[in-house]
Amino acid sequence: MSNLVLYRKYRPKNFSEVVGQEHIVTTLSNALENDMVSHSYLFCGPRGSGKTTIARILAKAVNCLDRKGAEPCNKCSACLEINSNRAIDLIEIDAASNRGIDEIRQLKEGARFSPTRLKYKVYIIDEAHQLSKDAANALLKILEEPPAHVIFILATTDAHKMISTIISRCQRFDFYKLTVPQIVKKLKTIAKAEKTKIDDDALELIAANSEGAFRDAEGLLDQVITFAQSINDKHITAEEIKEFLGIIDSKLISEFFDLLIKKDRAKAIGFFNENVEKGINPFEFAKNLIDYIRYGLLFKIDPDLNNSLTNTLTSEDRQKIEKQMAKIEEKELRVFLKVFLEAQARMKYSPIPQLPIELAILEITDKKE
Image 1: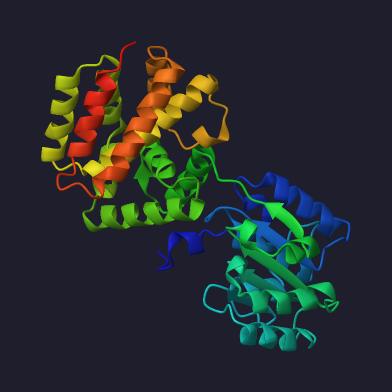
Image 2 (image 1 turned 135 degrees about the vertical axis):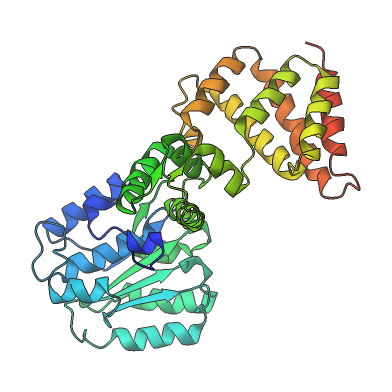
């Protein structure tokens, strides 16, 4: 088995392998097939959503010697060099650590020269929003008059921090967070390839805790598989995932939420403290509770749960929330959310971490319907 981490080992090599960014794949594929590739692109979106992966596939596609439609062949010398990170004409720059004017001047100087081996010299600039003002202005100059043999792909998690003139010089693509079903589907393929048996609800837990970032999901799966192999565990369950990742069981949050709905203050405070004594982190409990209430509020607004913000829920959690939300009004949910948000903020400065949550419970259960 390869020593590569999973996100590198199973990084998509073709557009068809990319998960969840169909709108971008379709547009780029059409551009490639119709010979309408731009000289500069701006990929915006959350971390782990596939920005640099698609950038590398695009770089490979424009340089492929035997491309079929939009897809690189992954067999020619250009594709093999890029896949093995040996292509000197594919330059990847991390703007977080190379953000100054001198680095961009070097880039401009290098861009003037024709590619050494490939058809196009491709620059992928990650975290482009972190370029200094002078560096960004220097980059703008070459984006305004780019050499015909150069393609720039800028990637950023914070497009609003980019200067508007750079944005206007690029074709912009906005990446989406991935949904739980999208991530689970890909994780199943990886687990099968790694000859690891893992339950579907365990994969759902990994996906839900990746917060829409597929790279994070692969990282979590990598940790779980490594741990399972170390103890010779041949079948990974959801309970093991919860224990290994320190995930607070949604059943606990759901049960606690039921006590709040019933306004049973004594049982709610007892339940909370009993679980803290068992080792539950009160800060994590508060965070999970706020997430849960937030999803409940979103459900009240959109009963079909089609809102993209709720796509990180497991199917089991959706069913629980659907039942509970029938017992409470939207107005009361807003009060719950406000009170526990304030309690969470106070926990950082409280000599007793549980105290703000206990006071929040008393305030919530004192509300008159």
